Length: 225
Image (cartoon, rainbow, N blue to C red; front, side, top):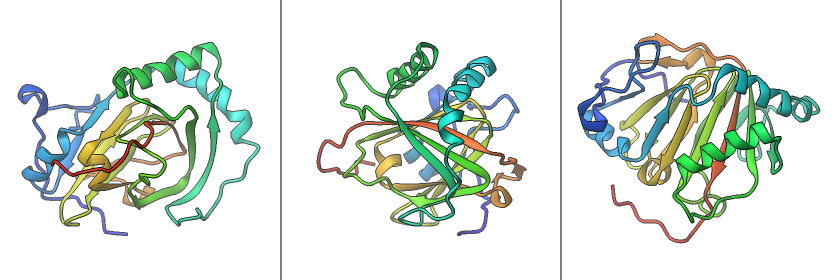
């Protein structure tokens, strides 16, 4: 994997010039140059503190019995994920269903077909996700994830030029949404703990559970970015 990028970042100024910051005071996106930040920021959405600590605890109580029946896997079938276990879930308690529906409501416009099964991915502390682009056979234009238990750094790498990259600060209980160019023309990865830096700031990795919703594939894709 590439060495962690800790220099040559620029502040991102979307949303009318305001700088998006986490509660820690850090920006939420850092990139290798202003052009790539501008290109990616149109198709990335981050929302901090999407749920409360009490809601996080409740949804984890629902997930833990199924997750704990599995062992962490060291190798994924396509070598993308290491140190993980996963389930797909269609039915939730009323409280958890309301959280999942909120995630769907902000990620997908009305009428957009979505995968009915929700992907739950559990990474152990030493687990990580290598750079990849989700297959267009199984996923459409939008990927939305709710991050539980641990903060992390998601890195987007351009498929056209690996010098173009953007790091996203995914804090605990935050939501990320990737669309369009960020979804199709950039790979995404979750950095392992020893590489988990956001600029010069260390972002400690613990066990990380993510709840992921995806739109259905709709057909050929073009890059308008």
